[in-house]
Length: 63
Image 1 (cartoon, helix red, strand yellow):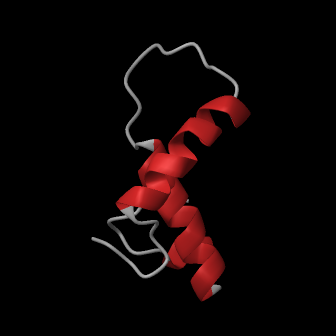
Image 2 (cartoon, rainbow, N blue to C red):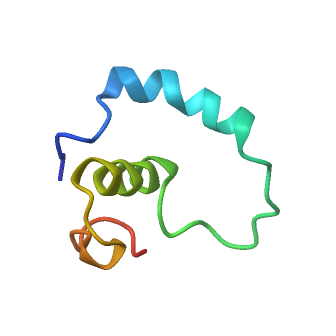
Image 3 (tube, rainbow, N blue to C red):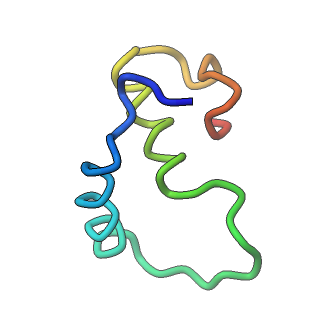
């Protein structure tokens, strides 16, 4: 589901390479359950709406 706080595809194209530069590489033992885009959507939703982390919609990653 897309929220008003979610970045557009064009914005994500700009943000994704920057996240790879900022976030340290991690040793992957299994595939991640949530994509970086989904995690960012959750953070931006919380920042825009000012809700508690526990009150995020269920389709966003858990707090």
